[in-house]
Length: 296
Image (cartoon, rainbow, N blue to C red; front, top):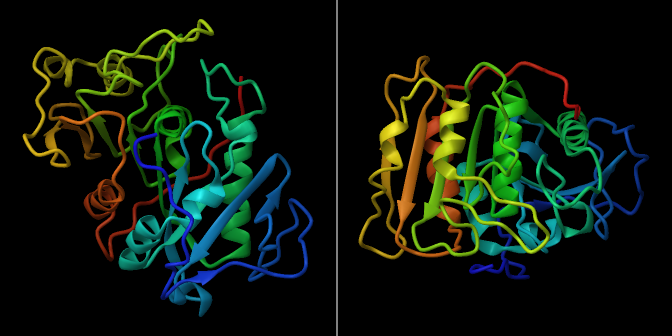
């Protein structure tokens, strides 16, 4: 992973969620904190969270649900000062689910640890029950394998999140035949020199195959509105600069955007911040319904 999330204590202005008493999974009480040594427990796993002062005072805030990459952890996400700074500027909670075995078991993944859709549903329900989080203002983002997890959630459970911001990860094969409606706001960032998760995908030694980013867009937005993107991918000249294309003619108001940079397998926290500001401007919450989160 090009950007390893660093363990650091730069959490000024934020409240680390901690408590000496563990809570029983699935029985969160409003305002109840979680054990500092292992985070918040739900039936299928755990997550960690930091909340802004507004939430600690009982004022509802939005949240970024961030999925770590392969071999990463929720602890690393929460301890990263750059991601914490982004959440602080936005005034939102940063929620980091923990992958079982440091991986994610989305459709097509080599990992088969658990039903990730059920797990994410448990995390969302617990976060909203335990903390003053506005369920209409939750952004799902993630890097690498975590980005692929975000694509799977955007396809299967678009109503549980307000928007999606995957980075350097798309669907895996076999690609889904179709996605649930309505098409959600989605901003994808990828490096044109990424050899770990290339734009066209690749086959791993396990036999599993990463999917093609452009084909992923065609599935989530059928009808050909992104058909021209694959033939002429463009990236900005600066290493961390983005060249972005916003789809048109896809039907519906939801933003659909592909942003490319000339680098490799990389993540920059500012890309997540940009996605939040574009999809959820202040004072304009996106309505999000409740739908079932289960695997077939």
